[in-house]
Structures are given as C-alpha cells and as structure tokens.
Image 1 (tube, helix red, strand yellow):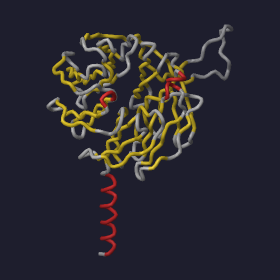
Image 2 (cartoon, rainbow, N blue to C red):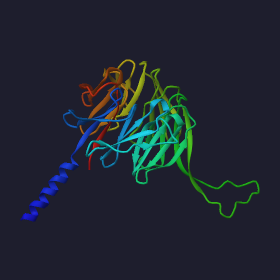
Image 3 (cartoon, rainbow, N blue to C red):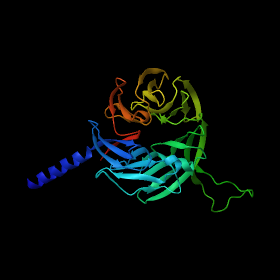
Image 4 (tube, rainbow, N blue to C red):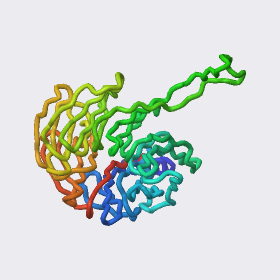
Amino acid sequence: MKYLSVFFLIFISSLVSAQKKYILALSKTDKKMVVLDYNNLKIITKINVGDDPHEVITSTDGKSAYVANTINGTSHEINVIDLITFKPLKNIDTRPLYGSHGLAFQNDKLWFTAQGSKAVGRYDLKENILEWSMGTGQNTTHLIYLTPDSEHFYTTNIDSGTVSIFDHVLLQPTVPPTGVLPPNAKPIWDWIQTLIPVGKGAEGFDVSTDGKELWTVRPDGTIIIIDLEKRKITEEINTSILGLHRMKFTPDGKYVCIVSVKTGELLFYDSKTRKMIKKINSGQGAAMLMDKGKNRLFISCTPNNSVSVIDLKTMEVIQKLDIGGRPDGLTIAEIH
C-alpha cells in the first residue's frame, strides 16, 4: 500500500508538471520576456532578455524558450530561458550571422533568419554549434516558416520585396567539359531557392493548413496569394487598408486574420472565397499568435503598448493586456 501511495504521488506530480502552460510575450522597451498564466492571463514573472527582443519560440517539450534580438541587423545573440526555473541560460552566439529575427524549431534544431547577413541559419542545440547556413541574397530576410518535414522553408525579404521558397533537393553531379564524370562523383543534397516578387514591404505571412498556399501582405493594403506547388502568384486582393503588417490562418484553416499596424483594423477573410467577412479595430498590430486550445488570437499592438485578445468565434476583442512597453513576439509554452 505504501508503494502504491508513492507511485500515485509521482504520477500526480508528473501529470501536474505536464499541464503547465503559459503565454510568452516580449516587451521591447522593458527588455523582458513576460510569462503569463495560460488560463487567466495574469503575469507570473518577467525575465530579462537582450536589448532588442523581437521573436520568441519554445522547444518541442516546452522547457526552453529562445528569444531573437535584432538591433538593426547587428546583434549576434539569441537568449535562452529555462521555463522550469524561469532563469536565463547561456546565450547562443550566432556569429558569423548577425541580426536574428524569425525563428523555427524542429528536432533540437533552432532555425533563424539573420537580417544583417541576408541569410538563414540552423543551430544544433545538442552540439552547441551553428551547423548550417544559407544566404538568401535578399535585403531584410525577416520571418521564416519551416515545413513539418524540414524539407522546405519560406522567408519574406522586406526591402527586396520577395518571398524565398527553399527546397531541399538531391542534385546530380555536373558533367565536366570532358563529358566524363570523375569516378568519385556522387549526387549531393542541397538547397535551391525560388524567388517570388511580391512588392517591397511585404513582411507578415502564413501558410495554409494544407500547405498549398502562402499568403502575405504589403503595407499598401494588398494581399498576395502564392501557389506553393506552381511557384507563382495566383491572386492579389486590394483591401484599401493601409499598413497591413501581419497575418495568420485560424487553427481550423477557414479564415485569415490580417492586422494593420497603421490603422489598427483587423480583417477577417474567408480563405476559400477570398472575401472579407468582418472588420474590427483591435489596435495597431504587429506579432500575432493563434491559440487553438481556447480558440483565441493574441495581437501585440506595439504602438499602443498593449496586447489584444480576440475571441475567434465572435471575432471581437475580449481583453487588453499590459505586459510592458512596445510588446512584440508571442508564443505558447506547453511543458511536457
């Protein structure tokens, strides 16, 4: 009976641990990562980060958070935070890549854009090394989306006005002028880039739930839809709303939410009909986070020094959060 009680306590303890869930939000003015209770959205703690925090992501097990610092493309540090103890750990040094911004995490590998180096890097967290990088040749390579199989990734390049589509492909050896391949010639895996011109200023983007389309927006109010299989723009929609900045598909894939950092308008578009179904004022939005668990959307309204919470069922603002000055990156941490 004694052993059963001990086993039960251990089981309950592990179950409680597995249920820890937080909303993480960055304050650029305060240089903090703010940890909020997932359910009541009360602030649990604030943790020091770098001088210019922009984006945040967590490891697959939710035990670590990574914060990208940009500093106009000159920073070479990504902050690492222990989400069990809420303590900062040793920073990741991204050199020779500078200006980390967009982040993606898969299989103990941290992918990041490097604005100052016009590149994308991949850091091996087990080996503590920058194991791979690839130049985009584009100005202000900003946000990144990595496919679940890690065989494709996409970036927006703001000042060049392009979207990069990178594919991991097996390249056959190039036949030399002699017409005879060397005896040791073998196929090699490499990344091939396809550039899609979308117009200068395009920044926020997202990929449809079926992985077939990429939507992005320009500050002049245009939505651009790219067919990822055909590698071409299939539609451009003029919303007449200036300052379009970030966008996200809803968790069910039915709608696309697009926010203006200039006017504060939040647009809800039907992803199939391409028609706007609702427009509200949410605040001048930057970073966006979809929360499937509670069917809500978080928007960092950087110029307004607040984070808006939107109920995706009613498509209305239900709460405004004060997490500090100039809020930006957002993510969910679920500890397993």
